[in-house]
Structures are given as structure tokens and as C-alpha cells.
Amino acid sequence: MKPYSIAFRQKIIKVYQNEAISQRKLARCFNVALSFIQKLLKQYRETDSVAPKLRTQQTPPILNDEQLAVLGRLVEEQNDATLEELQGLLATETGIDVSRSTIDRSLNKLDLTLKKDIPCQ
Image (cartoon, rainbow, N blue to C red; front, side, top):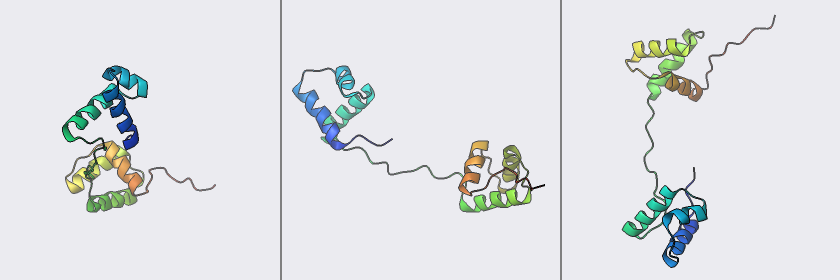
């Protein structure tokens, strides 16, 4: 979800300062969550800024490039393996135990699918 614009945030602050309005009514008036209003006002009081906070850190991937390569090799060797089987094989080969969801996301990242191609008859 994208952060609200600075102009919108400033408008909320301006209305809050000029009107004797509660935070709950302010949230209803601007059709935003009460928690957003509370956090915005707290941020404004503490930093005198309404700019959205930057998200500087992403969660690092669970499987590194080497482990992804191992997973790709496992799929090539056993193309009929289920996610659960690949999960076990990856744990055996690399020593890292990940969820089925991680296996599925990693296969999507590698642009691999577990669906089998049926040859024309």
C-alpha cells in the first residue's frame, strides 16, 4: 500500500489544529483509520514532520542463490516431486528447513512449475 501524500497529511494536521475536532471524527471525516491519525499526530508532535517514514530494510530472502540453484537442480532431477518432497530433499542437501510456501515462492522465482506437460497422443 502506498503512503498517503504529504499534501493530504498536511491537510489533516491543519484541520486538527484549526478545528476543535476529535481524532475519531477526524478519521471519519477523511475516511482513514484512527490509528493512522494517532500515528500521524504523534509523528508531527515529535518530529514536526508529516512526511511518510521510509522503509529502508527489506526482509532478506530465506534461500540464497546457491540454495536456489540446488532447488532448481532437485526439480530437474525429480520433476514429479511434490512441494513436501522437495522440502525434505532441500533440507537433506543444504541443511536448511523451510516451509512449503517458501519452496513454492522459490520455484516461482526460478520460473519453474511442478505441473507436468502431457505429450500429444
